[in-house]
Image (cartoon, rainbow, N blue to C red):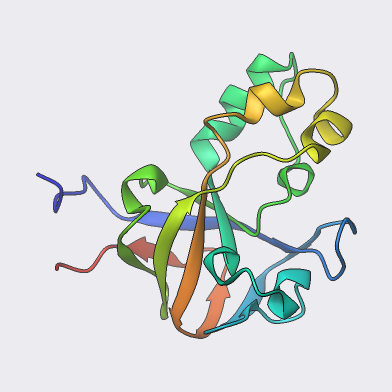
Length: 155
């Protein structure tokens, strides 16, 4: 059962913050490198190897928006690197998966931080709780593009 996924996913959005607590800028692509994560992203110089890349489920954006009384949310406010749709990220927490040519390994949940209150308003932290996505390590680097396929290789 755990090997079956109804379909592949898609990279919907990419963002990076070049400095800690800096604004997250969107991009059409990004270079991912093993041991550092996204080239130019502030986590790339961090020792947090479990958090080389952060990913969030596109389908959860609507849930978070509804919980805080908005129609939509700019993904940059959530401070995640990559938004994917069509595949359940939570099922990938301890799995190897691919974004286009890049191979990642899920490293666990990406819990919300105190910035969610600032970015989303009162209750933003709790709205994100359970919807924060996952952290991942880069196994094989390369460039990820918006529109790339998200897939899970057979074990």
